[in-house]
Image (tube, rainbow, N blue to C red; front, side, top):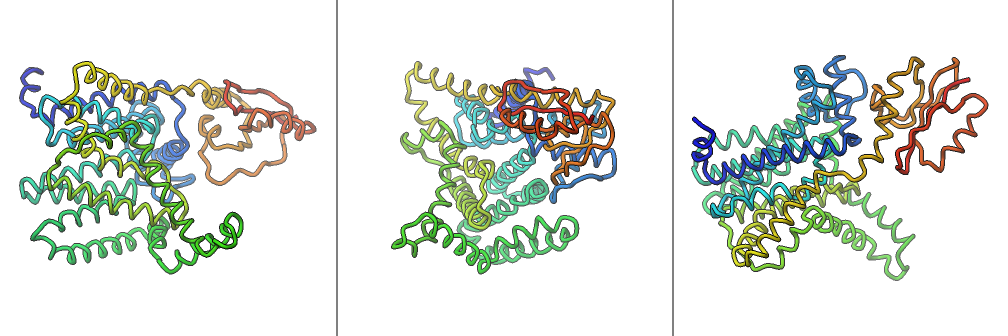
Length: 471
């Protein structure tokens, strides 16, 4: 079979998925090439993976390390280095997530607009802002989108093998990010809300509760801390008492005495407003589609996507009010389940536009996709790599790092517990600091009796790396 015959044999959704997969691989290559300094979380995951692959798991460990176990397996069989292998693995998951997103966008889209599904998937800001980062979110997003796809397939065909595949996908997603359990509950609820199935909701709720209890029992040893974190978030009484204590402290500092009785409400509304604000950032220019004319979506899409949106919003609200923390990556799933609805409106508007406006829209999407693959700050961050390479070549031992990123690039561990600065014991021992450039003189002066400056790595960033050696 020739390539042309293979292409002609694919349906619209398959073509969209394949093009998005290949396009995403190209964008990820450009992203990692333009920004070779990986993110902090990525350093932790890679460091854990190489320890697992080379030393059986010694070294510091994150309390939900299954993504690093997977990376360790890839590192063992890869002919490339630890970081390069991890970049390749993440790029594949990124491409797979983009492909499934394109398939979902093209689900009920006319064939002539298939290319728009590919462009919108590749230009999605929620993905592109993390494209050059090694994150366990990438496999979690892939497994989550794939689980949503299997539910659509089950709804369309009634074949129960899709349910089995969906359960496996959700379990794999939970091994990457435990929060995917919230998506599992949302998909079960979405299926049960269809007319004639609501009698199964109570059974589904009981099975979900049993599954969570089983998960806690299985992982209560080494990994129970992570499970317990989310169990504690559901302790309503404790969370309410903690929240009101913080609200009262907030009121005493910032709220007029006559309004302090509303401190809890003010804090709650302020916190919850972070979610839509983050969502607008995740959607980027796609949010402008809200102002176009409405478009019809299928009943199954409306039920499934809206249920996931509501349940995930509740999950984020509980987490935010319990721990006062919300990364933009946590909001990406809200953007993903809004995107098919926005895409339907966009396609309808696109069909009415003149050729000039259509070309302009395609140009903007292409620029959005390419801009997500380019880092303008890569050169400034190269001081980490240069310092690490230089330290690796030195015969003298490094006895102190104040920052785990320099340690990582120098071939050491990415430590989570800060190192204690030792007293210089032997001449030539190296001490390394990552500092704001304004702090360099003070550190040199503070250690001038026992250390001398050897090297300063400065590539134009606000930070520099200072290397000093014992006298």
